[in-house]
Figure (tube, rainbow, N blue to C red):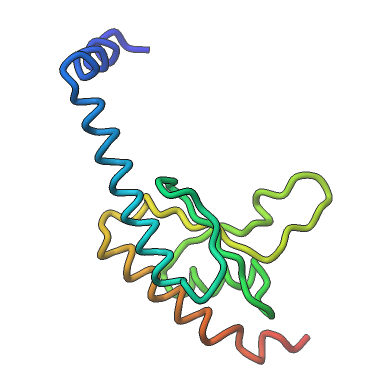
Length: 130
């Protein structure tokens, strides 16, 4: 660790700036969680009120990897529950949304609108045919 970094961190702790930053981050994440839950209210979501992430359980017949690919094609990056698998258990179809990544709430709103549209449309028929 850099002595300069430690100096600034101690200074921010002493003058209250670190506490202000923590409070701002917590409030921003609460607002983003509320926004995401509002957009995705038709589907099951799991996330703590001030968490940086939100889990979205996918409705059938979506598979996690298919939804991730479709979201990416539409400019939105989400992570498959498969990426967090432990052992041999196959997780339920779900994706993890990182709500802290978009630079603004407006950018998050655009991404949520894309995800909502994908969920409403469902996977296309030609992708379901093997």
